Image (tube, rainbow, N blue to C red):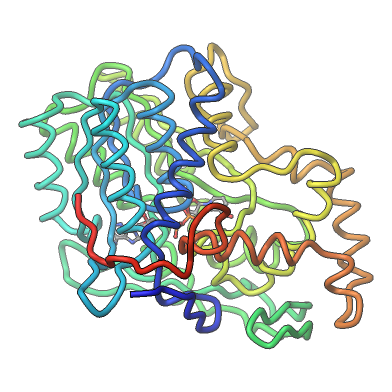
Length: 392
Ligand code: NAD
């Protein structure tokens, strides 16, 4: 079939296998171009391994450090009539490249919050990999089924405390408009913490520890976004921010409960980027279009792969890495520093329907959005017939 993007609101409902493979290859090429990355992991478990920051973490582990990788993701397989999800094709492409490079890779597709998938991971590690020295927690999910009670929790994206009215950009209608977001109630806050907070991260580390699969000195990190004043009302100080605060609690708990293994647990703060998760957040498409403009002009623009290569090399595996006052590893300083934020704020105040395309880098945002699904990549023939079936 010939595959063209089918965009519905903030999501693209299909994906291009050859385009996803080209995007994975670009990331591998970037990592290889960095030369010797120094000390790093050898046996890595990546939870949320198929897209965005998790996929980048897997690529850096494998192609930057020669590590064995076990990935967990939640993706849809293709059929003869319908394409699979981008994460499915990214994973198939990653496996093909890992196999060419003689790197061990295994991926389990299923609900990482469930006991069954945790058991499958433990069985696979025991069979193939042994103890692991790095666990990446990069899940982004709108819901979670509690493994004990079966109750389904849903996350919401709402302000906390008071209603908030702000500008946003509707990517579907090409329209800048105001949105008013009502504050979350206590139940919505607690549900969001259940989904995106640290409880499942702790359960993973406890299960791995119980199965004696954590190497002495094993590192683990979960990813967060902290941002600044422009995004605080809808992110940092909103429901999702409350869930992310819970990661700080979980990191401390993981460290104190595994002193026998000297586990190092960190929350790592990364910059705002176009991913499937971030394009669903109101305000983010506008904010990201403006930061792309400013950071490209400053020469500091980075994608997932650059951020994660830097995180591993300069923070996670560096001797005495700098940390903030909450012991977090920060890779977001090029976005959140005052000078850059002042430029974004100036654009934010000026932006209207008429000048949006001139003031922002929406073209760059849109290109990155399409790229998430394997579209708009140079060198890919989008008129060519594609076999939607791909496996690993
Ligand atoms: P993403 O949507 O690209 O990736 C999410 C991953 O989680 C995918 O691999 C998906 O298959 C997997 N997943 C989702 N539900 C699952 C489930 N139930 N079981 C197994 N796998 C599941 O998201 P992303 O933007 O890369 O986000 C990853 C982390 O990085 C999140 O914690 C996010 O908050 C954080 N982060 C994102 C940004 C950003 O701007 N995108 C910035 C800073 C931090």
